[in-house]
Length: 163
Image (cartoon, rainbow, N blue to C red; front, side):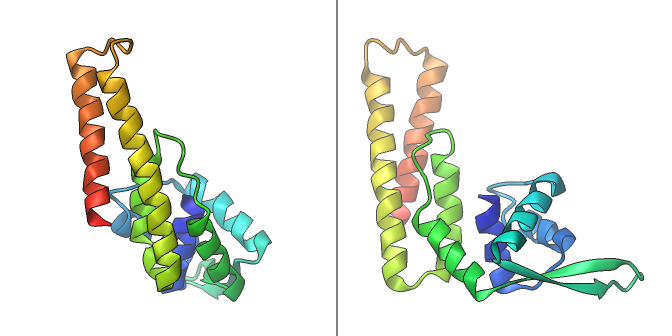
């Protein structure tokens, strides 16, 4: 998800890696908080792929830094990442769906519909599987586990209700 978020930020602003991390904190605080140790390798990978280009710049404090900007290929790559987003891992599904929907304004209407349909399908399946586990006599869940699982079903329903 870091690549999606980085490219999304660079669609809006040219920024240094430090500034990208600060924008992530402000914009995506509810969804993720990657460290610079996660952001740096992701930016380097995106540079190698040709999604980001950099320009050397001197900061006001006199330190050398690299200003990152998204390339036309980077915009296409971002759209592709959103449209082919793997949502099958149940532990990450709800959060990844939220991030993808948050970033969906970079897609055209048809692409957005495709993303929404993908998310809907995965959420419906997730909800069905969770309810099946809740109602299964073999799962032997205690009360706390049932509450947690029910809360996840509620979260999935809230996202589905927004779509």
